[in-house]
Length: 283
Image 1 (cartoon, one colour):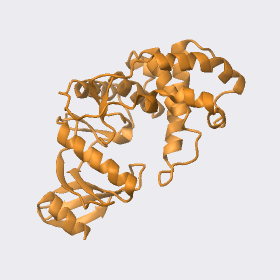
Image 2 (cartoon, one colour):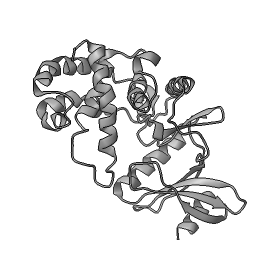
Image 3 (cartoon, one colour):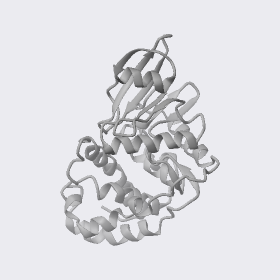
Image 4 (cartoon, helix red, strand yellow):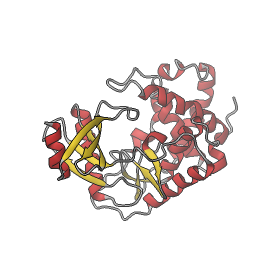
């Protein structure tokens, strides 16, 4: 059944379907598909309501946006239910960091700029500002999940929360540039002279500094340079990044995606000290 659907989506005979493991935090099914002529493509199939919706949003963005920073769209088959299939070029042979080289970090930052300079599609959604920027307000309402991480004391939080919240609330999040909104090493690779970002389901319109700021903690956590060494980011935006992870990393595991909270904590362990330095809060 899957082979038949892949053949229909791609428009070419399928010889073999192989499971792909190693990246991704959702239960979507991932496959390397070998075609009758020996070439290969990559396919993702929805497995529940959430992954089906995300794949449909991602497919819409492949139709809206175009550039060397996106995988080439190879096919699409929508069953109208929970298992749509998106087919893209096979990038399994590309370099997926880490490790990081300084020139690669700059390539990613340059690619974020190139994405932001794309013509704006008429139907591209705007950023949900509170979802990104409301982290410290959420911590103020319920500090226990954040405090349970052991990254600070309640006394320190009482002192630091007002300036962190004020800074985050002053950040300029709205904008009319295209963002990927999930720039991390597991979502990007280097293929020849291309820097390619995958998983375009969150793409929206906002201030492109959001993509730059959110990329830097994950890169540094993987052995790359400190954020301040490669980019100048508004301290208010740094507070937004730290707050985004602070209000989420201590929450219960995400159903069907147990790896999400650990990676959020890893990014918080970089973003929080970065915000402390950027705002001059002290230890």
